[in-house]
Image 1 (spheres, one colour):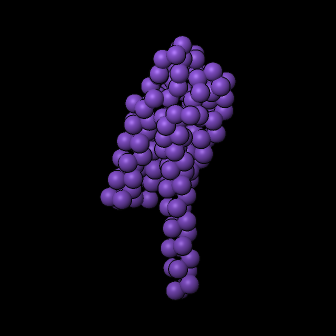
Image 2: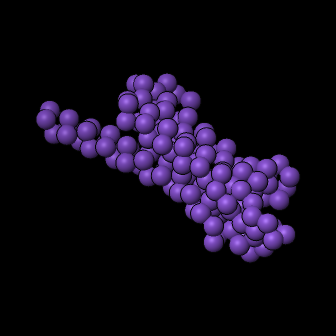
Length: 141
């Protein structure tokens, strides 16, 4: 990756921490039923990938974490792309098991996807803010 323009400001650090905490909370919330027993988020979103139940959801976690790292390093476009990929892969990966587990009816799935969406939204807002600053500088000169 290219060298970032500057270290993340306090707001970016706080947003990254908030996104990571919402992601961790999604892993502790109930996500679905399997054999009439409630399952926690980590059992599907992480262990499901390892145990091949939700194998297609595992890359979404990786893209989210890469996007957070990129955001903290000042690579906003990479953060945006990783956030979008995490959402798409998360939805696509959930399709094979969603009907069997009633996943869409539980908060963990939506919190998990929401953390990905907020990463993309924050990265996009920072890109827009940077462009706005550049345009104001150009008008002054």
